[in-house]
Every structure is written in C-alpha cells, then in structure tokens.
Image (cartoon, rainbow, N blue to C red; front, side, top):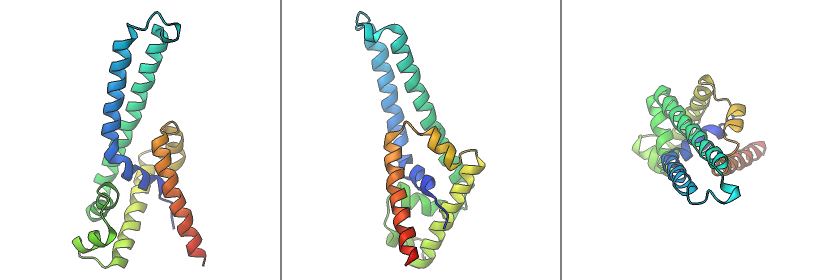
Length: 164
C-alpha cells in the first residue's frame, strides 16, 4: 500500500487555503498601516517590517501554489476518482453516504478511494511536488503539518493492522 499522506493532507486542507491567504493579506495590510505608528520602536524599523511583509507574501504564494496544485491534480484525475476524493476530503462526507450516492458497494468505494489517492499522489509528483519537496516546501506551515501528522498516524495504524 502506497503512503498517500500528502495527498490526503492537501485535499483535506484545500478548503482552508483561501481563508488563510485572506488572513495573510489582512496581516500584511495591518503591518503596513501600523508600521508608521511604531517606527520609533527599534524592533519595528522599516527593514524589519519589510522583511515581515515579504515573508507573509512568500507564505501566501506557497499556499496559492498548493491550491493550484490540488486543482491541477483533480483536473487530471479520473472524474469518478476526483469526485470521491472531493466528497471524502473536502466535503467530509461519510464513506457510507459517498458509496450510496455513487451506487458503489463499500468494498468498491474503498478500492476507488485508494486508487484515487494513488493517482493524486502520482500526479503531484509528476507536477514536481514529491513527498520530500512538500515536506520542505511546507515546513513552516504548522497547521498543515498537524493535519499531515494526523493522517500519518492513521496510516501507521493501518499498516500495523495489516500485519495481523
């Protein structure tokens, strides 16, 4: 079984990316507007404020790139697989509901979900975002790392169960 932790993580966090990007925009605006008032404080000089704003903008660019990556991968997936991935990770629908809506047995649903995750992971790698690259690229996004670690624990538990 292939480890699709990054695929699951990015699909799950997708719905939050726009909100986080908007919050970053708000922080940039706040830093820019308030920098005038605090310029006399030595910890908030123009260089420091500029570096903080640039850092926030770079962070937003990374999140937008991840959003584009997810969109691109879903567009290139089999439409049925993409639909199941969206329902499972973005909409948080229950497996039983997804299987029923798609007229699938539970066994077929789980097989298609696994195939979709594998396909999504392969597409991410094809578009230049291997597991290693994603670890480095998103190393400062603690909220995404927490989701990743949650899925990683689940994968480890599933692997342990497979041994019995």
